[in-house]
Length: 96
Image (cartoon, rainbow, N blue to C red; front, top):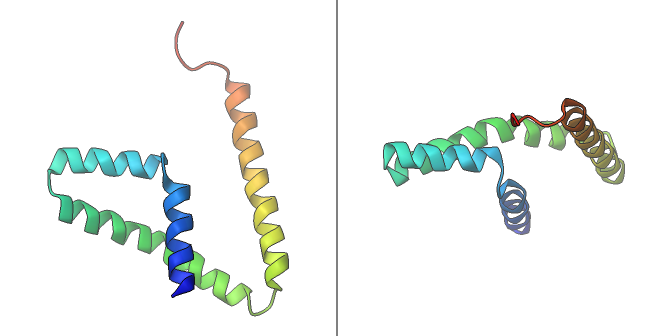
């Protein structure tokens, strides 16, 4: 149960303000059906998260967890740096 609780908190914190959350709000506003939208978006997240969990589980059997954490941090940094570089290279996107 500690893994489920930690995973829930981490994903909830990471998704705050994410485009997925805004898309979910738009769906809820359009369909006015809390249960259906909550079930649909939860199912969608499970579909995208299940392969990541499966791959992480398999990798943890051949790669030390400490190395996996380091590689994840490096990959996260690289993706963030690339996104920042792309955003600043594009300049302002609002006509002006």
